[in-house]
Length: 239
Image 1 (tube, one colour):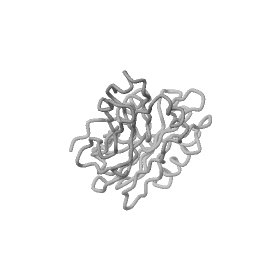
Image 2: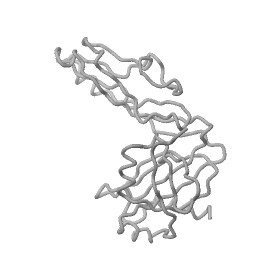
Image 3: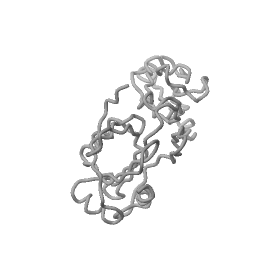
Image 4: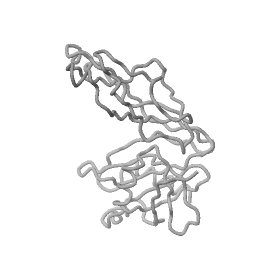
Protein backbone atom coordinates (compact mmCIF):
# COMPACT_ATOMS: atom_id res chain seq x y z
CA UNK A 1 0.00 0.00 0.00
CA UNK A 2 1.04 3.62 -0.51
CA UNK A 3 1.15 6.25 2.22
CA UNK A 4 0.21 9.54 0.61
CA UNK A 5 1.41 11.87 3.38
CA UNK A 6 5.13 12.44 3.96
CA UNK A 7 7.07 14.48 6.50
CA UNK A 8 10.78 15.32 6.64
CA UNK A 9 12.75 15.06 9.89
CA UNK A 10 16.33 15.33 11.11
CA UNK A 11 18.11 13.52 13.92
CA UNK A 12 19.00 15.84 16.79
CA UNK A 13 21.52 15.87 19.60
CA UNK A 14 19.77 18.58 21.64
CA UNK A 15 18.00 17.09 24.66
CA UNK A 16 16.32 18.48 27.76
CA UNK A 17 16.56 22.26 28.13
CA UNK A 18 18.63 22.49 24.95
CA UNK A 19 15.48 22.13 22.84
CA UNK A 20 14.67 25.79 23.57
CA UNK A 21 17.27 26.73 20.98
CA UNK A 22 15.58 24.51 18.40
CA UNK A 23 12.25 26.25 18.92
CA UNK A 24 13.87 29.65 18.45
CA UNK A 25 14.95 28.45 14.99
CA UNK A 26 11.40 27.45 14.02
CA UNK A 27 11.93 23.75 14.73
CA UNK A 28 9.86 21.35 16.82
CA UNK A 29 11.56 18.65 18.92
CA UNK A 30 10.05 15.21 18.44
CA UNK A 31 10.60 11.57 19.29
CA UNK A 32 9.67 8.34 17.51
CA UNK A 33 9.31 4.88 19.05
CA UNK A 34 7.33 1.71 18.53
CA UNK A 35 7.42 -1.54 16.58
CA UNK A 36 10.83 -2.54 15.16
CA UNK A 37 12.15 0.97 15.77
CA UNK A 38 14.76 2.17 18.20
CA UNK A 39 13.89 5.38 20.02
CA UNK A 40 15.04 8.42 18.05
CA UNK A 41 15.21 12.12 18.90
CA UNK A 42 14.18 14.27 15.94
CA UNK A 43 13.60 17.85 14.89
CA UNK A 44 10.84 18.99 12.53
CA UNK A 45 10.24 22.14 10.54
CA UNK A 46 7.27 23.71 12.34
CA UNK A 47 5.55 25.00 9.19
CA UNK A 48 5.83 21.66 7.43
CA UNK A 49 4.59 19.71 10.44
CA UNK A 50 1.59 21.99 11.02
CA UNK A 51 0.58 21.55 7.38
CA UNK A 52 0.95 17.76 7.55
CA UNK A 53 -0.86 17.52 10.89
CA UNK A 54 -3.86 19.43 9.56
CA UNK A 55 -4.09 16.84 6.80
CA UNK A 56 -3.28 13.65 8.71
CA UNK A 57 -4.48 14.30 12.25
CA UNK A 58 -3.80 11.43 14.65
CA UNK A 59 -5.41 8.67 12.59
CA UNK A 60 -3.61 8.75 9.23
CA UNK A 61 -0.25 7.11 8.61
CA UNK A 62 2.61 9.42 7.78
CA UNK A 63 5.81 8.49 5.94
CA UNK A 64 8.46 9.90 8.23
CA UNK A 65 11.52 10.58 6.08
CA UNK A 66 14.52 10.96 8.38
CA UNK A 67 17.66 12.47 6.88
CA UNK A 68 20.40 9.86 6.59
CA UNK A 69 17.97 6.94 6.89
CA UNK A 70 17.47 4.76 3.82
CA UNK A 71 13.85 3.83 4.56
CA UNK A 72 10.94 6.02 5.64
CA UNK A 73 9.04 4.99 8.78
CA UNK A 74 5.25 4.63 8.72
CA UNK A 75 4.10 6.43 11.87
CA UNK A 76 1.06 7.89 13.59
CA UNK A 77 1.06 11.11 15.56
CA UNK A 78 0.69 9.78 19.08
CA UNK A 79 0.56 13.07 20.96
CA UNK A 80 1.34 16.75 20.66
CA UNK A 81 2.06 19.39 23.28
CA UNK A 82 1.22 23.06 22.95
CA UNK A 83 2.51 26.24 24.50
CA UNK A 84 -0.13 27.37 27.05
CA UNK A 85 0.03 30.99 25.88
CA UNK A 86 0.59 30.87 22.13
CA UNK A 87 -1.05 27.49 21.41
CA UNK A 88 1.96 26.69 19.19
CA UNK A 89 2.96 23.03 19.00
CA UNK A 90 6.17 22.58 20.98
CA UNK A 91 6.68 18.79 21.03
CA UNK A 92 5.53 15.76 19.04
CA UNK A 93 5.54 12.04 19.82
CA UNK A 94 5.36 9.66 16.85
CA UNK A 95 4.48 5.99 17.21
CA UNK A 96 5.30 3.26 14.68
CA UNK A 97 2.47 0.69 14.84
CA UNK A 98 2.48 -2.93 13.80
CA UNK A 99 0.92 -2.71 10.33
CA UNK A 100 -0.33 -6.29 10.51
CA UNK A 101 -2.40 -5.81 13.67
CA UNK A 102 -5.67 -3.94 14.02
CA UNK A 103 -5.83 -0.91 16.30
CA UNK A 104 -8.72 0.83 18.03
CA UNK A 105 -9.29 4.53 17.63
CA UNK A 106 -11.89 7.21 18.25
CA UNK A 107 -12.75 8.98 15.01
CA UNK A 108 -14.41 12.42 15.06
CA UNK A 109 -17.77 12.93 13.36
CA UNK A 110 -18.13 15.48 10.56
CA UNK A 111 -21.63 16.70 9.74
CA UNK A 112 -22.47 17.49 6.10
CA UNK A 113 -25.68 18.22 4.17
CA UNK A 114 -28.82 20.19 5.00
CA UNK A 115 -31.83 18.88 6.92
CA UNK A 116 -35.31 19.99 5.84
CA UNK A 117 -36.53 19.48 9.39
CA UNK A 118 -34.02 22.08 10.56
CA UNK A 119 -34.45 24.46 7.65
CA UNK A 120 -38.25 24.45 7.38
CA UNK A 121 -39.56 23.25 10.76
CA UNK A 122 -37.29 25.05 13.21
CA UNK A 123 -35.70 21.86 14.50
CA UNK A 124 -32.24 21.71 16.03
CA UNK A 125 -29.62 19.07 15.35
CA UNK A 126 -28.55 17.21 18.50
CA UNK A 127 -25.32 15.17 18.43
CA UNK A 128 -25.55 12.21 20.79
CA UNK A 129 -21.90 11.32 20.20
CA UNK A 130 -19.00 13.37 18.89
CA UNK A 131 -16.72 10.42 18.06
CA UNK A 132 -17.13 6.85 16.85
CA UNK A 133 -14.91 4.03 18.16
CA UNK A 134 -13.64 1.81 15.36
CA UNK A 135 -11.13 -0.97 14.77
CA UNK A 136 -9.00 -1.39 11.64
CA UNK A 137 -5.49 -1.96 10.37
CA UNK A 138 -3.43 1.25 10.68
CA UNK A 139 -3.49 1.91 6.92
CA UNK A 140 -7.31 1.78 6.91
CA UNK A 141 -7.97 4.20 9.79
CA UNK A 142 -10.29 6.97 8.56
CA UNK A 143 -9.54 10.55 9.48
CA UNK A 144 -13.21 11.34 10.11
CA UNK A 145 -16.68 9.79 9.94
CA UNK A 146 -19.00 11.63 7.57
CA UNK A 147 -22.62 11.97 8.71
CA UNK A 148 -24.98 13.30 6.01
CA UNK A 149 -28.03 14.87 7.66
CA UNK A 150 -29.95 15.52 4.41
CA UNK A 151 -32.07 12.43 5.19
CA UNK A 152 -33.48 14.10 8.32
CA UNK A 153 -36.75 15.47 6.93
CA UNK A 154 -39.01 15.36 10.02
CA UNK A 155 -38.75 16.47 13.64
CA UNK A 156 -37.50 13.51 15.65
CA UNK A 157 -35.70 11.96 12.65
CA UNK A 158 -32.59 10.02 13.66
CA UNK A 159 -29.42 8.58 12.18
CA UNK A 160 -28.20 5.36 13.79
CA UNK A 161 -24.72 3.85 13.98
CA UNK A 162 -25.80 1.09 11.57
CA UNK A 163 -26.51 3.75 8.92
CA UNK A 164 -22.97 5.13 8.88
CA UNK A 165 -21.10 4.59 5.65
CA UNK A 166 -17.57 3.32 6.35
CA UNK A 167 -15.21 1.12 4.29
CA UNK A 168 -15.58 -2.63 4.73
CA UNK A 169 -12.09 -2.77 6.27
CA UNK A 170 -13.34 -0.68 9.22
CA UNK A 171 -15.26 -2.28 12.10
CA UNK A 172 -17.51 -0.02 14.18
CA UNK A 173 -17.37 -0.89 17.88
CA UNK A 174 -20.54 0.92 18.96
CA UNK A 175 -23.95 -0.73 19.05
CA UNK A 176 -25.72 -0.61 15.66
CA UNK A 177 -28.93 0.82 17.16
CA UNK A 178 -27.25 3.69 19.01
CA UNK A 179 -28.33 7.14 17.87
CA UNK A 180 -25.62 9.36 16.38
CA UNK A 181 -27.66 12.51 15.67
CA UNK A 182 -31.33 13.48 15.60
CA UNK A 183 -33.50 16.55 15.02
CA UNK A 184 -35.14 17.85 18.18
CA UNK A 185 -38.30 19.95 18.22
CA UNK A 186 -37.73 23.51 19.52
CA UNK A 187 -39.23 22.73 22.95
CA UNK A 188 -36.81 19.80 23.51
CA UNK A 189 -33.55 21.54 22.65
CA UNK A 190 -32.70 22.80 26.13
CA UNK A 191 -33.55 19.43 27.67
CA UNK A 192 -31.26 17.56 25.26
CA UNK A 193 -28.39 20.03 25.62
CA UNK A 194 -28.34 19.39 29.36
CA UNK A 195 -27.42 15.74 28.73
CA UNK A 196 -23.65 15.05 28.57
CA UNK A 197 -22.19 14.07 25.21
CA UNK A 198 -20.59 10.63 25.34
CA UNK A 199 -16.85 10.97 25.32
CA UNK A 200 -14.01 8.50 25.55
CA UNK A 201 -10.25 8.78 25.75
CA UNK A 202 -8.68 7.75 22.45
CA UNK A 203 -6.60 4.64 22.72
CA UNK A 204 -4.56 2.90 20.09
CA UNK A 205 -3.83 -0.73 20.79
CA UNK A 206 -2.33 -3.64 18.95
CA UNK A 207 1.36 -3.51 19.79
CA UNK A 208 3.04 -6.80 20.58
CA UNK A 209 6.48 -5.74 21.76
CA UNK A 210 5.82 -2.11 22.57
CA UNK A 211 2.58 -0.92 24.13
CA UNK A 212 1.47 2.45 22.92
CA UNK A 213 0.35 4.75 25.74
CA UNK A 214 -2.80 6.84 25.56
CA UNK A 215 -2.75 9.64 23.04
CA UNK A 216 -3.04 13.10 24.47
CA UNK A 217 -2.63 16.75 23.74
CA UNK A 218 -1.02 18.53 26.67
CA UNK A 219 -0.08 22.13 27.13
CA UNK A 220 3.48 22.50 28.29
CA UNK A 221 5.22 24.86 30.58
CA UNK A 222 7.95 27.18 29.39
CA UNK A 223 10.79 25.12 27.94
CA UNK A 224 10.49 21.34 27.93
CA UNK A 225 7.15 20.00 29.15
CA UNK A 226 6.62 17.12 31.52
CA UNK A 227 5.33 14.92 28.69
CA UNK A 228 8.13 16.12 26.47
CA UNK A 229 10.60 15.04 29.11
CA UNK A 230 9.01 11.58 29.04
CA UNK A 231 9.66 11.50 25.31
CA UNK A 232 13.27 12.45 25.94
CA UNK A 233 13.53 9.69 28.55
CA UNK A 234 12.32 7.20 25.94
CA UNK A 235 15.09 8.35 23.64
CA UNK A 236 17.76 8.16 26.29
CA UNK A 237 16.71 4.67 27.30
CA UNK A 238 16.89 3.55 23.68
CA UNK A 239 20.37 4.88 23.06
